[in-house]
Image (cartoon, rainbow, N blue to C red; front, side, top):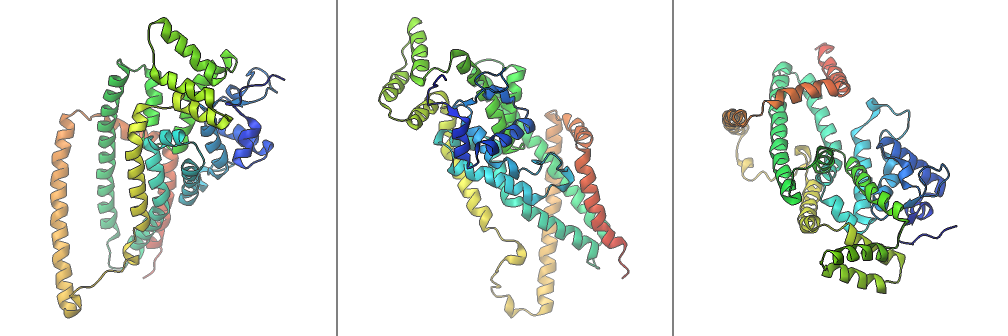
Length: 401
């Protein structure tokens, strides 16, 4: 049997790294490929042969490993799983597993790449806040349905208006950010991005897709390089880089970085060391290297503060000098503060109206079409939400008091 350079990962090696046996790893790999529309034959030495051995290039191996290790935590991993049975807890557990592996189980270069995806920050905050949102949303619908002095209709009116403003703000923020990102990409590539490549870049820069989707997209990008490596016959890293060096010499160029990489490869003593050098050359990116320290600092800051957050029922607030006031004085002071809050809310409404005028002038007519597409595309989510709110309001309808 032909021996391939050790820089490439075998199925057995990835299985060992995952903690599963060969069959367990392969079964999960098959499920990963099904769920994310990844052609599994692209990981084979001979794609057209059913029983071909697998070989994973460093371009994809660690990304594959992350998904395979965590795929059985995915709420839809079981083929008979139902969307309506997904819980905030299960989503948070799946994302948390991926985040832990990114922090602790992959090379530094792969960690940098994932940290610099917008979806990494979103996944971290989703993992930290999903269960909290579920708890507080439950409290909200229970309160409006059961507190005898509250107007249920007024509460729903207020909440709906707030959500409407939040939805529009999310849409506009995304549009502004997308325009900036596109401009930066065109500046970087020096030309207009082809539509098919723009779709991939948009996916990688979209904060509101799953981190698992971003990682699957990185695998699909890496597969392109893997195909070329397979067609070349799985050359060693140093031979691949020497070919690049020779091509540069033909056109009269010399890259000191390549010279440095070749020097490292000539003296490296292990497959893992060669992989690290491989990733340094083929996966390194100036933008990622520059952005990573900031992304990491933001992630650590948010993690620290999100974990320390406490809801109002769990906070220990010093009463200061309030103990000197009697009940009537406290109620009066409470009413004054509430009035001030109402005045602030009115001012916010005025400012939102002014922002809306500016946004219309900036041509955001696409918002109506966007909302219509959501209503059509995500009918299943609306059904679940409708049932949830209906069951909560049923407590109000059936109450005899």
